[in-house]
Amino acid sequence: MRTITLVLLAFGISLAVLLVLWARQLRTRDATSVDVAWSFSLTGMAILYAIAADGEPARRALVGGLGALWSARLGWYLFATRVRTSHGEDGRYAALRAEWGATAPARFLRVYVAQAVAATLFSLPLLAAMRAGPLDAWAVAGTLVWLVAVAGETIADRQLAAFRVRPGTRGLVCRDGLWAWSRHPNYFFEWVHWWTYVLIGHAAPLTFIGPVVMLALLLKGTGIPYTEKQALRSRGDAYREYMHTTSAFVPWPPSRPRAPGAE
Image (tube, rainbow, N blue to C red; front, side):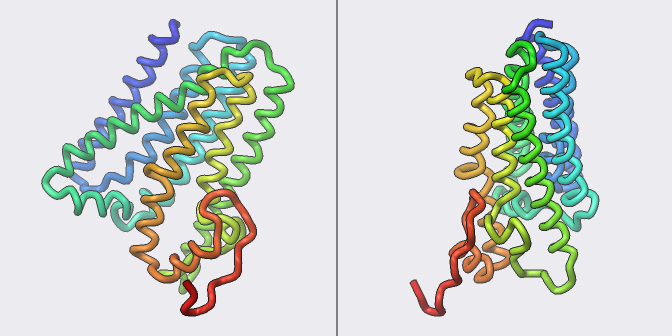
């Protein structure tokens, strides 16, 4: 199948699913499904490309398998923690719904469509990595990066999930394990994951979409800024102190807490 046709097919399927979910949130007033759909869209795209894209079959299977496993793990985690056991809309989307008021349906439509576009954009590094020739040492290096990234992201997610169900932690900040070294270790390892396809794909230009665009989104877009705004709203001074002692992104030994009254 021609590359452009394959990408348009992937986008069309993702868009159709997200539009259905957007219509559903008009009734439920809960847009949490958009993040889950983004992750599982990438799962489907990785599998579709592995089956129908050009490239050496073993390489397509490796890249497709890595992409599908990573996105499916993330999608299931988001579903389990934000949808299945949720007691309401994700705080970020609830705040936007309140801010947008009567314009919320149209604005959330743009959010859902944007996620289909984003999923397609982030699928391009996988497609490029599938077309880099026979498997070689760079594929091994990329797979090792993938293992480290997925292990780190999984550990961070489990540490946070365990903290949230512990009695007496409401309003407190998780400093367990990786969360003592980074305020967003899950985001950091999510970013590391995208270097997998740069290595496997021999640094083909399209493979850099993953780490470059993801870093911009995490640091300046819908990642850290929105998450920390919500954390400050719900945890207040406890989170402010956490911000002063703990790296925002790259895991790093924490600094000492500031003395009371210190600037």
